[in-house]
Length: 209
Image (cartoon, rainbow, N blue to C red):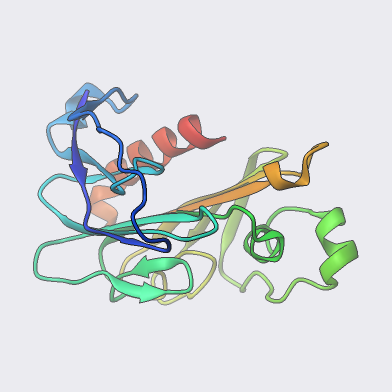
């Protein structure tokens, strides 16, 4: 169990329903790391992100249901971006999801995961995977990526002094096209803290795949 930090949240609708959120959450992080980590979430509890304890955070719950949560060290500020919030390309753990925006989901997943249905509607992927980014596929619907320092790839944030490791998860359309979603999480920390990124990403995969 890890402590939950509820982040200041920007809402896309007025007067959203605000549920009572728990103060702790069960996770699968190694016991040896649990004391160094917390869970960060938006005010509606849509998205849960594991990051180092004691950080500050910001969240966005968009009008179409797309959430984002970003945690950064004290002394830095989460910055608005097309994926909700990011940081100054240094240390951060950031996650976001797509909802009703079919084109947004396609743009998120197409560099790393095949999406023939999306390509038939939207054409060529709007951006390509950069040289230097490593990619593996834990499953047919999940891509794990690594952006080395200085490489601005699919991570957000990426391109700074630390490696950016992350996951893109795609839930393709079913009989109900509105059920399609995509998720991304990026963990950007010094190489010495790689184990923290691994714990955060493993939990994200378990929770949202």
